[in-house]
Length: 459
Image (cartoon, rainbow, N blue to C red):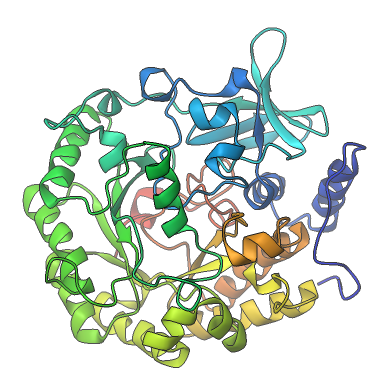
């Protein structure tokens, strides 16, 4: 791989076309990485601005609005977003065509009013993505699903209780909207879950802290009734870490009660996934017994020193080595293919403690990939969005260099091939032009499989 020893961590954007030159240089330098992934990673790491012509009319319009399903994934607080705080941007955008001849690419929306990327309508009212003022692709917006037009009996919206992402593929159930790792000595240093809760409450938006099981079931019943095409294929149960109890339940029983109720009410309707801490094997077995099919015990960052610094609560309550042991143990319950821990790609290079070169960061992250993949476990990753209310977001507003993200895609695919692994289940189809996973490009960068339906189901 090319050396980047002397390159700085940041790649500033200027209105003089520098960003375009950087993107095109990386496309040329890494021809085996899909050009769609280069653009997508840059949008995810640095955000995108929206003209008012590209904003949604919230839940009263024809475009599915951004639901803020767990984190803000924005480069500014709601008061700083201007019109985008009142008329929400779309949940996702889809890119096609343009001078790079982009294949269909689904991208999660991360708002940044200062971004060199802008979504705007041309003189004919056709939306496009502009980089440094030049149109580089057509932009499609997610249509408002029929199930969003219905409310629960108590008046709550389906979007508030059970939003869908990944172009409708995934029902995202954040059933606990805050985290019990609280304060500077416990919160993960890149995570704004607690701030996101506070800012939505301060803005007077509905943002239910603990979602009752009955409300979740009612919302899912509405989705099941009106999603006649069965576009929603999986659900994810998630929320903040639980270090004590909620309503007398520990973490496994709290999240497990939802899975049990969903599987009893809608047997086989969706692939059931849970994002939780790396729990002891007996607790993991409870998840499996409740009907969960895929387990995501996220390990966040591989390097030992950075894990201790960036995840102080997880280090204090569990510890890095025990966290990894529990991930391996969980494969004995779910099967290795159905254990898919996430890491936050890019925090490896966050100042002041992170790696100072792309070479070092990629070497460390690849070491973690090889550790898990050698055991048959396939991690996945979310592209780090440096939210400004987090410690790492404040000191690293530009995130990690785009080159890091492109080389990670290369290393990820190479490591999978080294261990004979294929795309993980529960993420929709792999391949450029086909992937729907929207918060990183790892699925866009993997080869398409001949039987996508089989490839997306758990073993």
